[in-house]
Image (cartoon, rainbow, N blue to C red):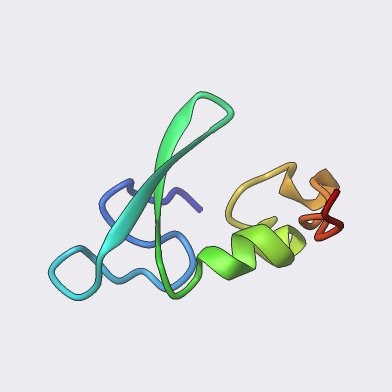
Length: 65
């Protein structure tokens, strides 16, 4: 499935409905809403069906120095 950079890649809402944040992955531009940004950070594998190869990206490491 192809996702437009004008809608959240997780929920499909556009910028008329919710603020969107731009991101680039594998040379392509996508958007994600602030509500679903934690999914990208903490559970990237949940977006692997929308962003192929993301299943290999580890979740954020929350260890602080």
